[in-house]
Image (spheres, one colour):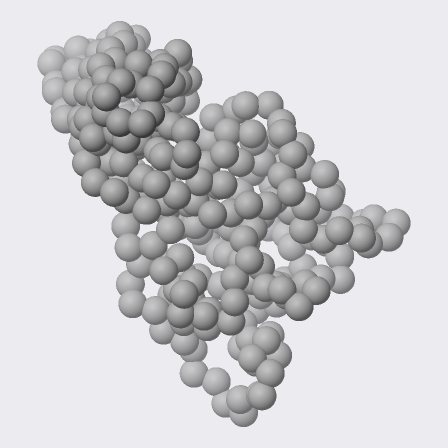
Length: 275
């Protein structure tokens, strides 16, 4: 049975969508298929050959890749997998990302999101770390899904009584408290609809694709105060490739219970925010 699908690619810069970036033609013949990618509207200042990451229906693959020159390029690959739920990404220099997702992938993701749960496991350590938010360290390059998710519904702040003068103290009283790193530090659990508590210049994060991807995978975000600074955390697993994607979307640090992130370890990608 022969099937063909056209997936439109999008160009992002630091997490913000800039526009269309070409299309991916997916042809399926039984359990075999073909991927044919045409890139357009890439920054003309970018030139070179870049790896292509794609999900073929069973797992993620990374291949050496597509040559981009003068804003465009062509790439083609035969694939023995069934090419179901196709996703494709190209990481470009200077914070640019080209990404496309098939309709089947978008439809299949929602049930999985609804069934996922996260569990906090305290970790005992002899004494607290001096540095509480560490810069992410390099680890093995293992592909991790990075998705574009639709805009959240309008934000709303839960009604509370007896408002306190200190905003952070009020937040601690309003939202569920957690200890994500297994120590004395207290954070609160949030959803994107709660971003009304953030300063207005940070409320646009409700549309941040990396943040929404982490939220839909684990059904929560965290917010904490350390050394008079506030940090918004997106749950995820640490990998070198995921660190690169997180940086592109503004999350410059990673924190985990062990203190030293290793490949495959659960934790939070962090960025500073203001209330």
